[in-house]
Image 1 (cartoon, rainbow, N blue to C red):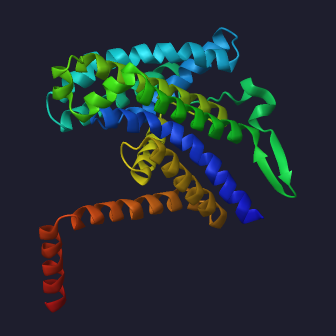
Image 2 (image 1 turned 45 degrees about the vertical axis):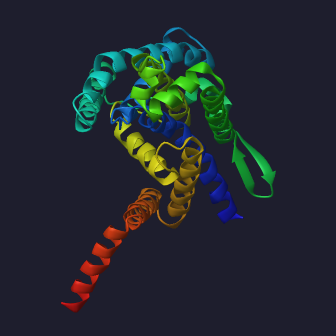
Image 3 (image 1 turned 180 degrees about the vertical axis):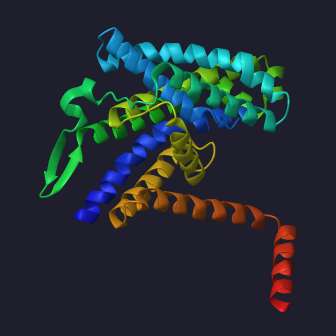
Length: 305
């Protein structure tokens, strides 16, 4: 029963990772940008929601609804002022630009809020610790169940937008070939801005659940970026529902690892990520017969030496 409990907790944790990684995967799928400021932006969103909830005395759900358009506007302007300009410099410039952005965000948050940890748990009362007794010794956290259900709604909603709306069709066309999209009348610049806005809204939802599930501080973003990146790689880069699968795999690995050793939470997750990454790279090499021949030749020479 204990093993089943850990697997279920890992699945629910994977729901949070899916929300966290969806913005990173979506932005890369549309613009081919690896956003290294992803985790820092999630922490910024958490602080925005916390501020709205505490300063205005709002329910956290209302604070989230107010934060979403604020972060969407921020995403729009980030694309216009930085992301789109950095794309003209090649693949490395956006990485450096978003890395610099993450440092700026982290330090500005530190200057404003200090190093003290914050949380939305006091704002949600019993939801932060409440659970349901399913059978015998099997308990399900109410917040974890809400997180996983929200992951399904977020991914399903995004899938509906991409599949059945004019904006979604424009995003898919631009992601496939921006030059060809321009030829048929699609404004790629506006599509990229919309994609950045959507990505920031997804990041805001992730920051919302992060703030309710635990504590956060100005420098928590780097850890969240690692978890998001591992989820995307495990599930497949640019794959929407693969993000959910990747999150579940990572969550189960971490949950089972923590059962073995307190440090196993991180070690098991990193190990699964590295194994899958190596397998993906290896399979990528095997797609080329010439590369396969070179690999076999080098191995034969190494064995014969």
